[in-house]
Image 1 (spheres, rainbow over the protein chains, first blue to last red):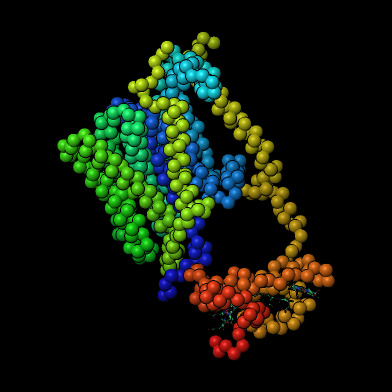
Image 2 (spheres, rainbow over the protein chains, first blue to last red):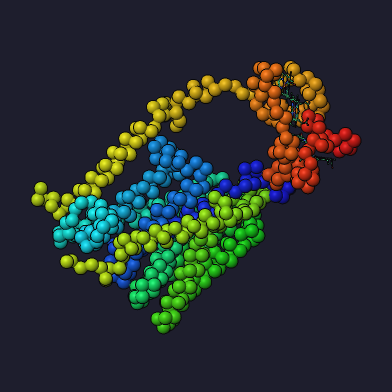
Length: 386
Length: 156
């Protein structure tokens, strides 16, 4: 048997760190949205302070989510053809419509309905260029009567209910893209979409929790500890489900031990040992679950809990990023011959390099900054009718 | 009208969406070529357009009618089954009119590596070298003859 025999099209990895970033970003969108929906549909009052922030976070990340894909393409302008002449048998081609549906029909509409009263009030109180922006956002209607707002509330609820399956679809799709690739045993698994959705929820909830704590601190306000406690509790439960699913997948693979197993097992013990076992499973999953579990059972002081939430949240983000990395990059490191392995070299300055990835991770935070300035999500200080 | 007083803003949203969808349909009608989908998921006219493109490769049989000397050399070596135009590029114009169109000779330090650079994706039997180490920066034809690359006196 020749070791390290790979096929010619495998010697160079086609899917780079940008393709790692893409499921990471959409995951944050889906997760943040699902957290917001929890508040709305299940009326969880405690997480209310993060409702609007979660929606704006979802929007900021959703706007950036297609950019890594565009930058990955040699001819980004051709991606528009997927809207004009979509091939219905291609999941990737249909994704354009899933994306648009989610952006236009779900997220923008829900944000607009929720903010309409504020937008109208801001369009009255602001001046100059901002006023024009707010005026455009009102769509020319400045009706904020009781009845109209009540109507918004009802329509918004319907949108949220449609939004939850849409968010599942958005991120389930990303898992599906990998899970449905028969030729790649590392990806091919019907559990993939489910694992992606749960890990998306985990990362989105952690992101909103961290952002909420950070922004509140920066603004010099007091963190609503009941709110953070509740979010951390959700994070804990959903993380446990997510972890169980991933372990189920793992146990299934080990037990089934099909013809690809030896090759994948070797990979996990060599090139993926650090990113998969150490970073993803140990540091990024078991440690945060342990910390979150401790905050659930131990009578810890408030400031201690906050610190632990920040640590657990940050580790979670690293863990979920590592999970995307191990799926995308890991799936390309072994040969379909099951007899050889390649390596991935991460460049710093190239179009698909680390620099671009870092920029694309910071960009949504910049967008979020503008959104928060434009549409302040802090409800308790919101404008009063004048 | 009064009935819609409090839902008017929602109707505006519906309006915005309708305008968006109409715009999309118009753009689609405008951009998608007429013959798209005639035979499959591509532009039907492209078949005729591609068929009408000038032929740029002459094929090795054509080259060999004139360059019998090269053929003799090449036939004897391992490059026997490598086509002339795989190395010399498309030369139909030259074959039609050798007097006025003279091909540039390929640069061996670029050309040979294209096939012979060592990589784990290549089958073990295929002769491959790490060019930087193997040629020490010299063009490959300093030592090898391009048309029959085996080095004389090499026992292998």
